[in-house]
Length: 110
Length: 111
Image (cartoon, rainbow over all chains, first blue to last red; front, top):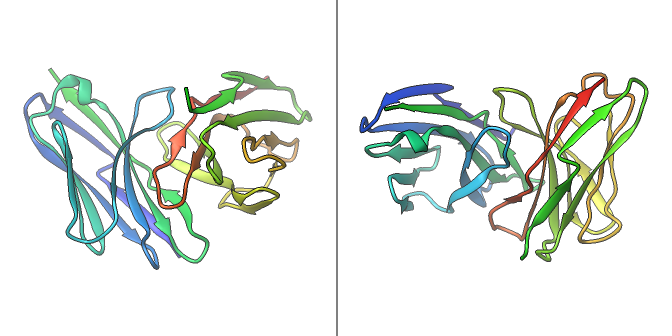
């Protein structure tokens, strides 16, 4: 069964304290792995797409990496405005549908 | 502006009532999705459609129905059979192998 597991469920960091969020997945025939940011009461906002193991992408304080079993979202020197829920999703499998993990709630303390 | 529009933003359902959530996109995307999100939870797939006049059940389709008569539109009906409908509903669309574009969501509550 295709599955996406994110850890930790919640993370509190001090401003400037770097860390990483994990997304482990099992899917046959990965077509893409996606990272999204979601603020309360809003739709998810796209961050990155990764297609193959070894690929990396960066945007401001965020960097996403991909292996054959997991992806990491590294956040460097975070600011309070980076506080949000970060969602990971994969597309693939027999039905080619997109499934999401439960997300990591990130809170950056000033 | 191209985008995906959900309406209404807030919706209240009475017991035994069916309600329909609207989702329209002008991005010329073939695939459209409906997700349900409960507080503190991720997105769970209800239904998805990869082409017009065709759709598949997701992980939690019971108590919901959809139609895909036009490429631009993918309405979701929450039927009276859905006993716990209170949630945040998100519609999304995509071209093949591309990112999902999300609407702003509909918050459904039970009166």
